[in-house]
Image (cartoon, rainbow, N blue to C red; front, side, top):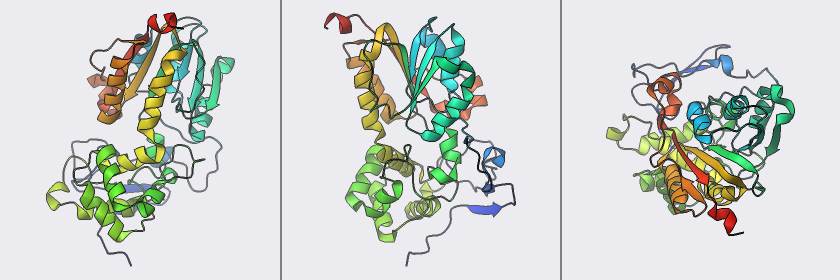
Length: 349
């Protein structure tokens, strides 16, 4: 029987009002907004959450486009231009591009079926100007010399964090899933309950930059199996020294990031995207990547710099202005890098 590892948060349930978590000092900036009052936080309004009784065809996919103005300015949207949105999500960035110039066209791809359903609904007014493709951008067949611009927003949407069925966040009790593409078999539960201690420690350190990776991996192996996100978060909190339990982020934040990256093979997919995308740009076409943590940003920075087919347009990453951060706290950690396809790519062919 699993040890009683103690609870990190107190919960109160309200009929037809969702779940409100009362967090005492220790909370995660990944899933909790940073508020002045850190002793009591109402985490979420459940008006945007589907109820258990609802069976709507279109999910409540909420995803505010980050650095939208900067994306439009950086891409220099052209009339009749063709753009590739490799992470369409709810369609926020695609809408901005479609509205920025006359007769622009979008090829919108996403590996998440829920995202594509939402994007089709949100972009319905643009009709035949948008082509939708369900695909991971690493597996997409990039057509050569086609697009005037390519964008990727690598962040996790509010929808994924808020939807208990997807198992991305320890905010809600949910099965350990974390798959962006639910057609794949590997889940967070498979990793946590079946991978060896050394391998777990390695991914926690490599993908989460977690200093206590070995201690946490040992505790997980000793107490598994784990079935839910909250069980895992509690186990991680329990094995972290007390002085680390009340910091700026929840003790489980880095481990959950590492699990999500491992489940979806995110860094490898990003490397493939950056390798394949330049050849799909027309001369002078631009690629814009928004990253949200140092692992992603490092890959984008060095790939742009080392590429013979790209000219870096942003020596330093573009970050959100205070006004945008006030309206969308998620934008605080966003970094935008832009590069332009240069003639050298085409002269070699």
